[in-house]
Length: 115
Image (cartoon, rainbow, N blue to C red; front, side):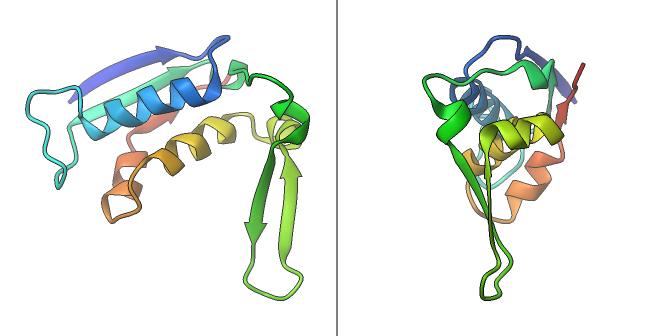
């Protein structure tokens, strides 16, 4: 089991998330296979100190739909950061992984530490 650590202090959200997603899938290893999960754990320190560029702090929206009529909930990035700051990075990494059976197993090996 290999552990790779990232420090998210003052890093751009999307750039850091893409590096983490590539590392979690094992694409940087010589034994990469797309149908297998790599034996890599990623630990991210200071996950709450990630930054976004431009005006995304006030304009980027996160949507959640319950499936019922009128069940669409919207939150802005700064509202999500107030309650669950690590959720920004986890959602970004989740959406960069392929939507298949391996995604949930890969995400279990992502450890986010908040200070």
